[in-house]
Length: 411
Image 1 (cartoon, rainbow, N blue to C red):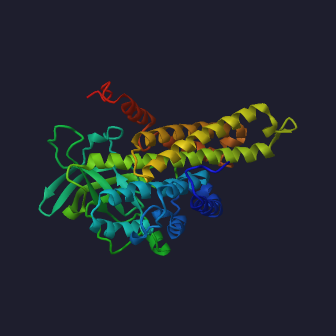
Image 2 (image 1 turned 135 degrees about the vertical axis):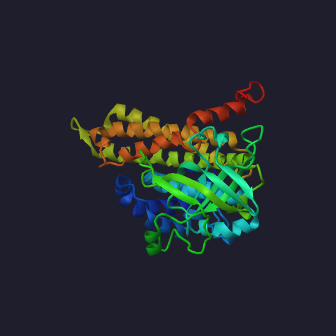
Image 3 (image 1 turned 30 degrees about the vertical axis):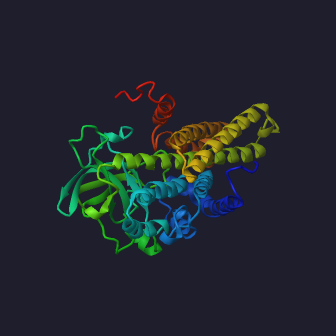
């Protein structure tokens, strides 16, 4: 609508590149891949070639060396057309790669980041467990030190790329006797083969044969999800997984502190995805209401439609500033934990309201797969759940507001 003060001409150029790709390559396949729950390997390869899979990482490590705001724009623009493509980039970049960039040794970065940043393989983040979702400190996966390696046993659930990916950062409890549950948790890098070996070998993406794989790491059954259906979500299982000590990520016992930082970044990413979804829904509404007639008039001419469109557009602008502000703070090395939670909370709930109104404005057609708003409303819902539920975001924000005035944690 107008120039946003956070953005430069380079940011606008990035937006045009991603927008063009999304319209040419993503829109034609989005519906069928959603219906078939098919992972878009062909487009993953193209996104890697365009630098989307390593947008914020340095060129020396195979990245596109964009700034953080550019990366957020990549996620936003993809989500306008298809949230599954957007979460593939976001989960791979923020969850799969950023912990190695943030906490990894130089050797670890040189070994793994070029494979991830170039899009040669996909990465993921193994945190959530059956009894450790919002309560991430309840991790039950255990790592036992055995000479020059750790033996890890446990299972992570709802893990993006657990099947298609090959490099993962996971958390495990290294000190079961720690007095506080969030102490004694450590991060590790583990590897496995993609489940789509044949397809990856044919396309030349997604699999690196000479990448040493971690014995005992495998993917579980693919989840049949409401939304993000073209994204791969599975259980990541560790059965006597033998992880070399050099694959410990960061300091021993600092895994909880480290993954909180990763989740802060992830919340900005989901905020950008949700923002893009809301914008995409508004665009669909504008096109549909300007073409569809009822009672001999274009739907867009009715005042009630004006009100709905105005509400959606206004909330989108508010969400945009929250998301971009959080990204700007992160880019300039300023505290952003609370702002990330606010951006994710507000943008995800805006996406839910915008897509709900979009279906309503499309009438019966909006409830069919003939129009993308049906897919968008399903995709929007997980934004209120993943990377910390809306309730968790409100707790994070309240803690920042109240500080030591009230013991909001209940500890």
